[in-house]
Image (cartoon, rainbow, N blue to C red; front, side, top):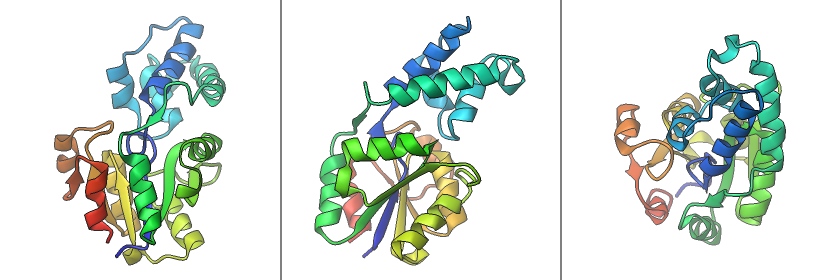
Amino acid sequence: MKKLIIFDLDGTLLDTIGDLTDGVNHALERFGYPPRTVAEVTAFVGNGIGNLIARALPGGRENPDYDRVFGEFREFYSENCMIKTKPYPGVPELLRAIKRRGAVSAVVSNKNDLAVRRLKEKYFNDDVALAVGEREGIKRKPAPDSVLEVLRRMGAEAEEALYVGDSEVDVLTAENAGIDLVAVDWGFRTREVLAESGAEKIISKPEDLLKYIF
């Protein structure tokens, strides 16, 4: 049995792509740049909002408007991150089953820490014990820092934990943190991409995770 289940957020527990796309396009259009498609934004996510904007904005960080576009996105998204966002089907039931059977769930995300905590409270409340996001001075995933922090705060050893995510960043995060990984293929990356990234256990339904926990 695993004692602690650490989940990625975007693309794993929550379908956030609608609000992310709206936020990106609001910021781009505010400064006269063409909008991006949902498919493009889906491909851009995974390494924090700074990289998301760098990938969406022509010229990336070298664009003289980068800081202004980034700031506009951050302000808009912080106020509009729960418009279209919703849990993936079966996820709330999975989290309740994990808690009911005696394990603990946590979240580690590259999303801004305040947004992560707000989303946790709205959608999962007490079914997720701890949720942490990107903060000043903490290296973002795939660095293991936030995962190791959660292990410490929850009093769990690496071998007692399981990491669950939907991207190549998550595969590397679990590897760098030295904990077991289960990847999910209902999020922002295909099963083929996950396998090519090194994921050996890939599930297609939330309830399938239980067999790797208990």
